[in-house]
Image (cartoon, rainbow, N blue to C red; front, top):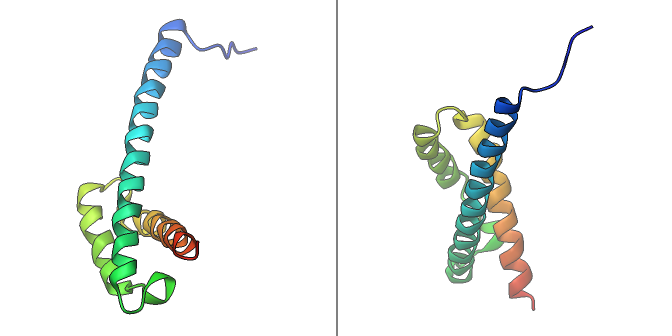
Length: 99
């Protein structure tokens, strides 16, 4: 039978790495909030805003630029991520506008 326990030094390293991920996640949340606030302002200023005003070409170029900075994720994964980010921001902005 195999021993599936993780050596203590590996356990400590995993805990350290997870702590780094937690810090990055907090920073990412702050960036997403800032992005949503700026995007909401843009939506208020556009003649056709919110979901009806999505610009697929601009989003494609955004993903292309981001892929240069995140090659491990690549354009397909980044497109899915950014679609979720943009949709969530538009949903929040639209909800705020109807209050």
